Length: 475
Image (cartoon, rainbow, N blue to C red; front, side, top):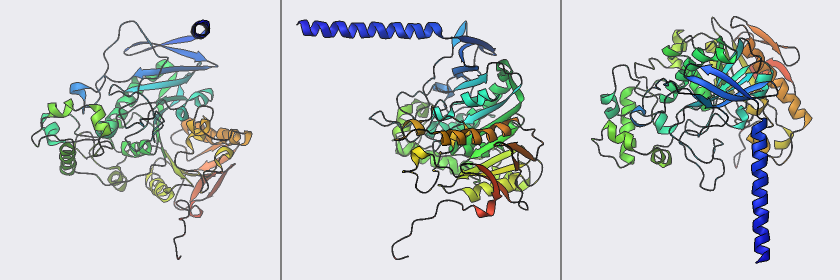
């Protein structure tokens, strides 16, 4: 009895102490306020960096707004706290609570169109990067530790990672939705409409954070990089960004017709057990969890050329020379395939007008050397381009620890991304990595940046498209 009482008192004391510590931490929090077009945001400032989390950039895409372009926010009353991340968009998660392949665990919500802002506390017309995460277009979130923008902010750049819709909530077309749509409504590509809405939010509001709406880079990795490729030919995105970064996602695919997209949507609806004559209202009643959990719908099914929001594929726009002409930085890692595709994008994007820069990331940190035997795997560059090893899940889950050599490479690689963000859009070279001049790629010059434990310019033809294939039996 006394033993139980003592344990109870101890638990109470621990709880009281924890509450007191939390209260003390909150009391010490230094806040900062910014007024955007929908109201006042209250974030926090620490060590020269202002951070705002869970900032809405559009109305929740729920109910009648599911499978529609994002709607502009109404103004809120009073001040809105922006200290915590909001749940990511619906996606398959592991039942044991471990992160899925996109780094996400825990609660998700269809109300997910939120972003974060990392800004220098004294920013004045600072360059801006809007970040689109990877995850196969059906996994991931903008708040993950690899995308922490603290280092960028300390180097004078505002970083804005966003959430965008995933899976079938992002990429879905169906005859019933087409029939119910207004004459200007997009008929698919809803993740891309989210990206454009976020870029519009940046144009309207980033000056309030000290940013320059005339120097915005749209950047992404993997599926996010593929979105950047598509944004190069989206008419409504023109003028909203001024540079582009494509990390391990140089996909130039032909456009999908509406007929093909709707056919795939019909098949997906059948897989959900819905009738052939299903209505738009009935489709919108299917739970987001069902869409994310069902194998036939979790990844999304369509990315059409609808003739409204998306009028041409970027592959065709590049051939015709009608793409949005901005500087492009594109590349891949040496432990994954894709360098040849990156060079193709650099060749097409940099053939006239704005320049294109080509890179290959080939550094394996000490704490992953026993695992990444064939080179830097897909996504390995993220904690270096952001210089975010202290918050990245790649580093925190490693058996070893980050050493000084790893940190030096993080600063070196990040300096090149920072230089690109700050670069004049008319430039054909820039300097980074302690004095290395990085020229724009041309087929004649064939220059590419290779990142090992240092940065050096090499001929791109000397870089294989990916790791060597393992020998097969009898070869």
